[in-house]
Length: 248
Image (cartoon, rainbow, N blue to C red; front, side, top):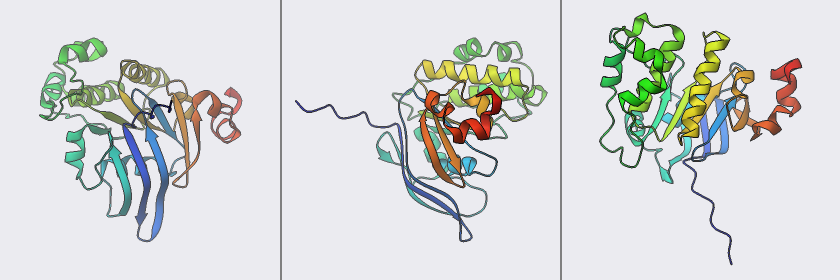
């Protein structure tokens, strides 16, 4: 009796390369993300983490040469532009968040209507979002620009949930947040993953990331240096010595 075929990765990246003016910023031979997984891309500033996330979405500052293939649920999306990739369910919350400062919290959520082709993906209602983020429920009439950094990050995630993500990518959600708020945001993401959401976390704060993720991927100079289950990676000297210090 033959062994069953492994499940198709939700996200499958093959030979992804990003080159700016002749300088290679990213070179990833293969990367996969599976259903209900929270994977963390970590590394020092300038390692290529944001370049990787942006390349997956087909968006970039400048005009790099991007080659390789990105598959979502087994289908290539490499020829699609960024808005179409978003409609297919690949969403990125960038470092600057996705909040309209002059709209109220409620208006921000209403504005993020689920796409027509979201069949088979979970569509979060506003009530579900308010249950998940009680602070947003209390501030539903406040403008986006009146929220704290942590609340804006939560609202950015909430807006993404309204768009029925198949894969949700978060780029440096800890930047500018107090440690307690970082824990709250990542614990909320962990809850979403436990409910079935697939998440790719791009994070420079390795100590925070390892408390939430299932798998850790170490990126250096645009290449994957090491990856594996988080407990194994915590013991890897390349992670422990460079990023965890005495707390490892």
